[in-house]
Length: 342
Image 1 (cartoon, rainbow, N blue to C red):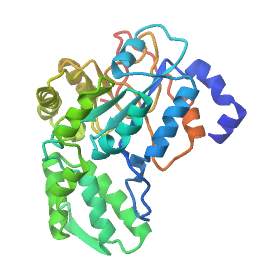
Image 2: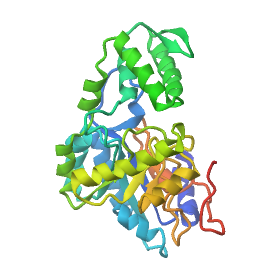
Image 3: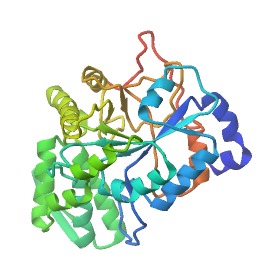
């Protein structure tokens, strides 16, 4: 990446692979934390880095646009300037307390993808609870596949290894099993999952404040933020349609854009693309890396995003990634769809 930047190679690639623009994906925005064990650090950026990113995008002559404008430019001929769209997943509380002031100062549009169970106070941020348990305990145990498993978590490397293993395992479980497992773990180690989840998430008053700003787009990310691939088709369809309906009712405005929870290729399938279309969404975003092509070459219901890793603070690296240097070359099939995992 450094070689691509300093050699100028990324500029050559941008001309042929840069597409019409990019969608950037963030989650949390908060000041740097000095704790040694932060397995979710990749989900976070600082307000200072957000400010630097916006200034850099303007300096690089990107047009900062809404999701509505992304959809328009994705089906028209390329503009002179490429665009960038800023999106935030999960409706974290610090989006309104830390990110919103920075974005408002610059007059930048952005999109928040909302899982409606969280402002309702019933969402379960299991990844935060798992981090909390492992951070405080020198050893933990829980039942996996009907067997009691024990893990040493006395050192930082042990904590990271345990977190990676358990988070990967939890991601594979159907929602009832995941909920049972995380509640069992929290009960064993006195973690208040409900209070932790509520404190980390925006409430409806916060979202109403954002929704009142014409530069803010509120999108949907289902109700409970479960990986759709872990659900039966009827349950996945209900999550998609109910998430849209609840957000529209609460905010009294149309919700036209959707984000697949987690968004990686293992978390959604072609069937979920169809469900999003049938629910009436104008677009749906993933976390598959890539750029947005013009002239309808990118499926609006399977839009790629550059999911920024908060452990990286290099604007040079961002500039190279925005060039499309790592993006696959995707062209539509005869029926204007894209190839997706079944």
